[in-house]
Image (cartoon, rainbow, N blue to C red; front, top):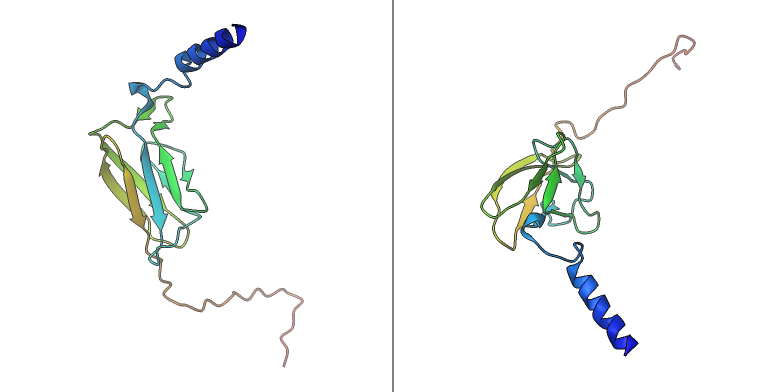
Length: 139
């Protein structure tokens, strides 16, 4: 009897807990996957909203980032809702930054972003020569 009572109590507590309750205030999850032109994930990429000060690093293994809410510098929350227009800036060192606009849907919000590599004008950069006063050039 006590085993049955404890099981029922555990079921009631776990379903009524706010951590398990799914409500409208959670926001719609949006996933961004960042890859290079060869379809390999870019481990150093970051995702940022224009109104936000923080940059969010992508997962180093698969190049993905996912969120349903962003926290703005003024302390407010930007919850992703169906129908809203979301602006994001995706960047990585050595790649061209992409700015995109996305309209959030009810579900299956995955944005695949391909960042082109920045082509250096001079492929062989020479290291600068730093001379000191005591150095004498060799002949």
